[in-house]
Length: 265
Image (cartoon, rainbow, N blue to C red; front, side, top):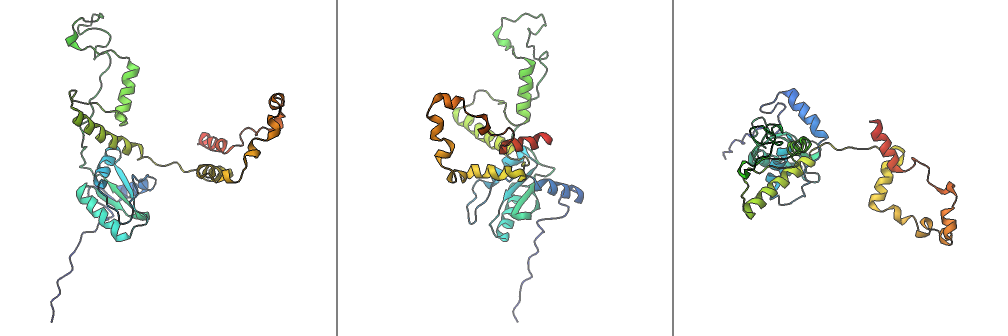
């Protein structure tokens, strides 16, 4: 009689209430993840050299990250999810719609130092010297900062939205500076692509018309003579005094329908 070893017991990758979350919190994150844009689309039988780094950078801008795996076998993207859970690390929330939805977890820590907090212009002594006399100091070693409150507000907003980065070290070499720029580029791109997409329905044919313009299909249905009739260019006076009935009615273009829908929202 042959002895057969017991099948190994693997922990379930997707749990109703993952570690650090209640079932209600997990369901809420899954609901938000449905409208989240994936950071990338993985090709079948591909080599994913930068996937772990891309997911880590994406977590800098969003607590949820989605990876599109459509076209791949279920066992393949589940293995990828298990590897990402181990290497990133992260918490797997779902494999719905052939996409890996991940949460960075409650114990997540940023790979980069936090940006320094800005003080008020008065605290930075922008208008005068350190003794508050209102006159500029002649000592260059004091490093008086001169800027307007509006500019400081713009700086704060750019740093908080990961559009700008404050370097703690000023005297960086070319290689170190390039590394900082590449790291910041990954963070800023992740922040830009981690917001829900605005999906417009095909109301009044607006979306279909825009799609036709994008793929160039409409250009095949029209000749150049239809847009530029020869009769219109025979005489300059006739061109400027043409009948106004040929003008497109106001608000009938596809872009007008899209703008009207956005204003209603």
